[in-house]
Length: 401
Image (tube, rainbow, N blue to C red; front, side):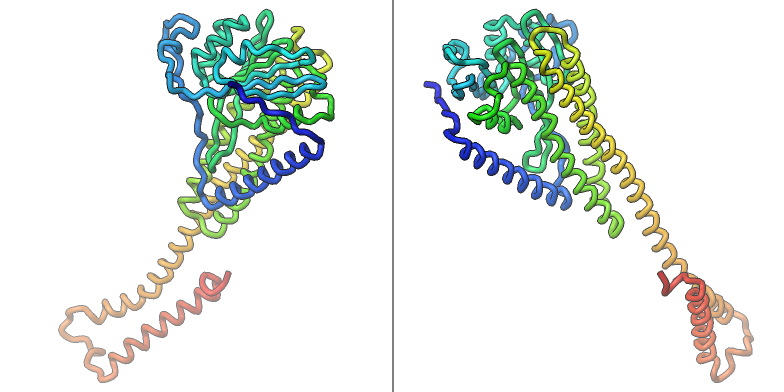
């Protein structure tokens, strides 16, 4: 039997839930920044349990994926039905339960969310709603770049969400099928960044429930973009700590952390530029799936995307600057070591000369017959080394910063 989650009963419950989520998010990113600064940083991991693209020459469609479908793939199917006076979340045991669930009389939008990509489930959903087979193939091929494809009665949007889980960035494909009164989202694994949107829907105040599925999609794509801001703030804080560490004590670990950051920023850059083009396509779309009144909202998301891109580019430049700083610090450290070794060698050059002269195997050296020659030798050595030390000090080579 499907389980139904009732909406929050009051605005106070909504505020408390939102406050708890914000505090948890803040503490999560604070601890993450500290861990990154300590070097517990690891590169972006790509979610997904499906094979890569089919072999060249394979017929288009999802038959390739159906043949290799894994029966052990965990799929969680939830529907969120809402309207002006309705908000009901239901978890279904099978995809047929979700597709055959009756709509409520006062229902405005149905959001079907599927966690876990099972080819048979995707095939069943696409056939039920008449989704093009090429769109189904793009959903299962989880190595897509963000893109937009418009069909007769639906729209396919491929996006990517980046989450920071256990000090590791997870890069996951999220696919949306947008229709007039229905939005279907496909995620590779459990866990997403959409909880703020769910809370907004559950909130009895506000106009969210009175709007259509195109506004729900806007809210979700905006949430994906906005989620990157605190993530990038973590990079900024980590780079500040890394800059201080490189300046004070450059080590190989600093360089490894720096390379990891540059690699992750490059991945985000490759995701964000196609996402910008996707949102620009939504803004310019002429189909009736997106109301013209929402174009301003999509333009706002586009502006947020450009801000994130600017931050990524700025941090990439900062990372390059830190790499130059690291190389310079290592070079300066090597120069200091060479200076110390050179000064130590300089002290022994005159001593070696005197010892070499009086260590020659001549039969007669007058000074060697003198009673105090041994003490004179050490006096000469101490005088020359003291003179060199004084000269180096006056030049500022030792004893001065």
